Length: 139
Image 1 (cartoon, rainbow, N blue to C red):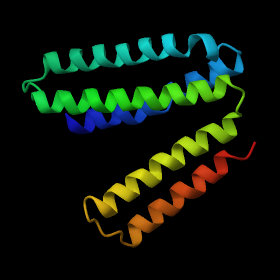
Image 2: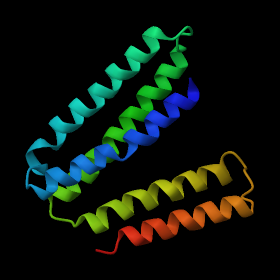
Image 3: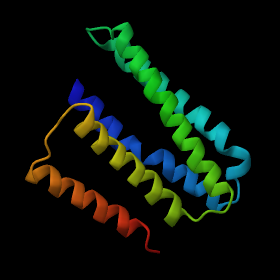
Image 4: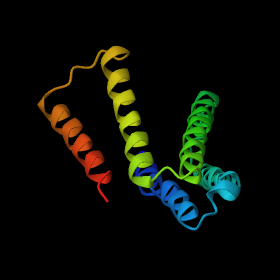
């Protein structure tokens, strides 16, 4: 079940920002970003409820609170990206800044909060992430 949920998250992770970019390209981001995000996250919540209604194990209250918190912060980040795009900031600036911020926050939390040691594979992954973000900024 977890693998399936992670694959769903992986696939849908890039679709929401892609929609924001389409709205910005059409000049509609200033007016429709909040509505777009409400429907996007509502559809995700309904999909998760449908998945869990068929699951043999029910999610714990703490799991639901963590999920709601993640959804709230994700909504804030997507709204910020949509507003930045609607104000005319180019996508080749907005998306790399948002992605790099997320990457560095995860690394910072891993090292400082969870006291993880970053080995050669981790350094290679971080390096590839930085390279891919840098490549996004070229148009």
